[in-house]
Amino acid sequence: MSRQAQPAPGHHEAPEPQTPHLDFAGTTPYEDYVRADVLTHLQHPLSDDPGELAFLVTSQVMELWFTVVVHEWETAAHALRADDVPMALDALKRSVRELEALNASWKPLAHLTPAQFNSYRGALGDGSGFQSAMYRRMEFLLGDKSASMLVPHRGAPRVHDELEKALHEPSLYDEVLRLLARRGYAVPDAVLRRDVSQRHEPSPEVEAAWAEVYAGDQDAELVRLGEALTDVAELVWRWRNDHLLATRRAMGAKQGTGGSAGVAWLEKRARQNVFPELWTARSYV
Image (cartoon, rainbow, N blue to C red; front, side, top):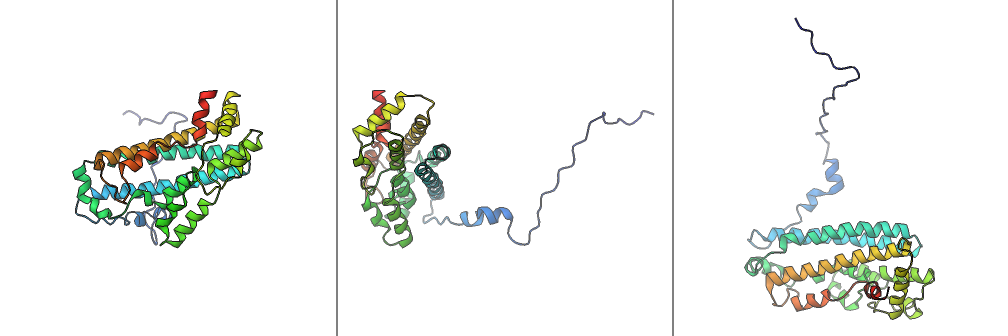
């Protein structure tokens, strides 16, 4: 009779996998942390069209990504104010990955035909993405300020107060330019002391400062900061263009749901560069 095979010396059989905890007194720890039940019951379609749910969920997902990106850019702005460029770079790099995920959110809506969109467009009423308060905070952090964009939120005091605070705070780009000035670059007082509640306007002196930065050591901290900001700007530009293309496919040149000019409004937005001197300075390096 043959002997039963024995495990080789030093060999240990893998233990049986443990059964996960299944019995909890209340909700699961996952639910307590993620609040998934809240999230998955926030959808209330207003039409009978089966495609409306994807439109609604996609819009809500975008709002969540807006919230994360705002957090990252505010973190970066505070770090720059404290001269902590490495922390700012970490936040900006995280935001780049998050912007990529945000931009991918357009995929479920990118190929709607006019008939498909019309089947539930009426459910939006006067609703429009430009009314998003969190997206507006993103735009304010980029330096695209406009007091008129607070008007739609007058009926929501908390939201209005948060936007008004953001309007009067330095943008992320304001903090970048103040950092350049502290590092010895010739950023003019007119830029440093400007009314930060107004939209940032391109400056030849700021353009020259960036050209000087980029003409130096390519591994320098400020060059890496400039490139991180350029990555952000490129993805914002792609976001705007993806929005434009999805809208053009779904509704052509019709008036937007919020009373805007629709595609014409989005075309104007898509032409505006974020951190403009970072782009134009490249012609002089």
